[in-house]
Length: 249
Image (cartoon, rainbow, N blue to C red; front, side):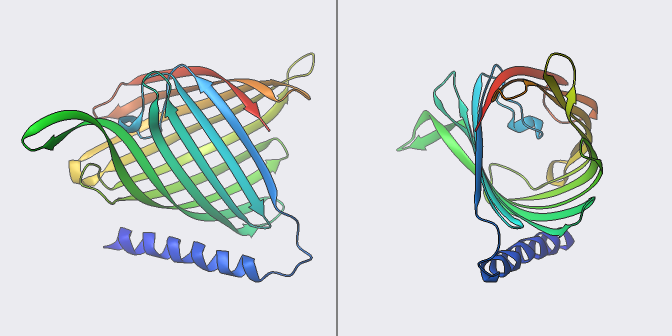
């Protein structure tokens, strides 16, 4: 009951923020648009049971105005030529100071997986879709233009019987565009996170890191992600990694 109330508060706070953003005067900044396309050899998700384990494409778009942002992310299974995971984020920066920032958000996620459908007593393989409604809280502190640390809390409410409610708490950091040599830049985002699925009595502690190697004034970067179980009873691989290429626009 408490977690459901927390999710409700997060959703309502985000909704209130959207309404407030619409009422701000016309002198505010114009809408900002951005996006990226990532192709990698192994689709990885922070929730290990949602990982694809096959080559994937991830298309992310972003529309921002003042403190509000809408970020749809479309993930595709390249090997089987079918959708993998669609996520639609709505976020609002409650606190946007020079160093301290706090955002709240709510979003929906649709996870596609191979399943079995029964019609007229006949079982056939088909693509099933599982839906979740998610609330999140994201505080962070900027030590410098290139270094920040933060916390992340997410509660996902299952809308179908094919998935379960889950909690995720992360301690993370970001090291942005560290100068290497000859114009090359490295961005690293390490984190440690706890994942719990109460209904299944499953939980795990994980270490995760994403890396991006780029060159100044070139919109293409080489990316990689690692995910390692420190202690977990979830039915998933203990260690996964990928490498890919990202085009940003």
